[in-house]
Length: 121
Length: 107
Image (tube, rainbow over all chains, first blue to last red; front, side, top):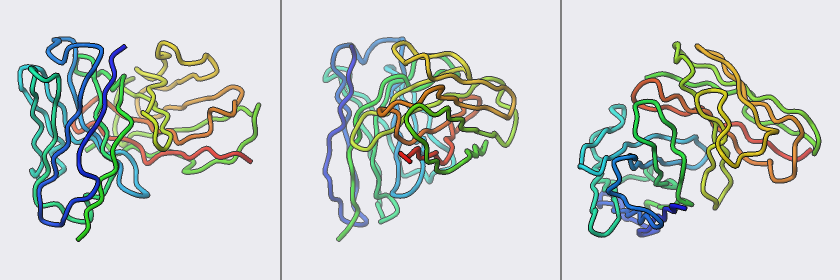
């Protein structure tokens, strides 16, 4: 069974760049059957869809967020990543990576446990 | 963006109770509606997709219904493991917005 695990710094300084990685095990990230996505949950708030990436590198982002996010994929390491530039306290959140079956209207059917990122000096 | 509004935002119930959570979309989303269960420190779990399809491995006490703009998640008989926060998500249009969540607590 495919598993996903987020990793990255728990604490980031304001104005710096946050980098998170999602490692996929039990299956290939190069599969044409899936998209790979990032979602976050800020304290006291609901879930927010950040974006998804296909194994080919095609990305789709939440247009409602400022374009500070970049999602990339490294098929040789079976990982995909999230970068967020110029972080502020508002970016403090639990960040989840997840898998979405290929198709325009499919759900996230497998998630990582999430990693808490705190933005503070 | 399509806004998703859940109600109630929190709910107290007892083991064995029947519980209903509703989700309303700001525009028609056909049946492109999913339900997730989220617990702190655990991987969120897909419960229902396409409004009423039960994800493999999810207990049959969970069910979903609705289409267009109004949807509901029903838990027929609450079990101790069901106390969590539940989110709906539309996958009709981008961005794939979530509801604000319904926290289900033990009475």
